[in-house]
Image 1: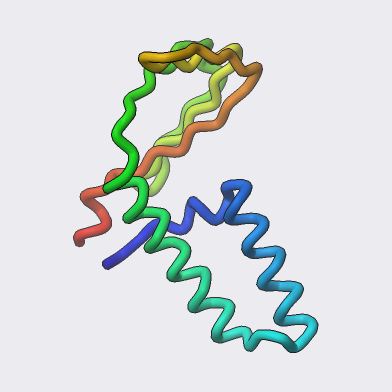
Image 2 (image 1 turned 180 degrees about the horizontal axis):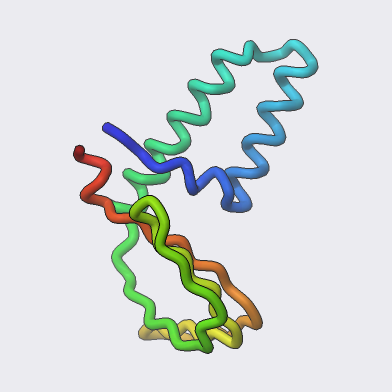
Length: 106
């Protein structure tokens, strides 16, 4: 199964990468095993988001920047409001990266 590596840029992905780098530098973990852990992280994040996330959110905001490159959309919104069935949250600036999941099966 192919996966995208963009979840590595999330907070949990960055923390995992920093921890793995530290463990490799200390000699606790081999670089090859650290790479295997990151690949498994990519797979696990993709599977979890596909199978466990059922809620839907609507997003409204002012489009600051958008880009389409290599089948990846990037949107930067300002004053974005996220709404789901229970709550509403407004943030000053958000970056959304969207990839076509059909590309994973090619």
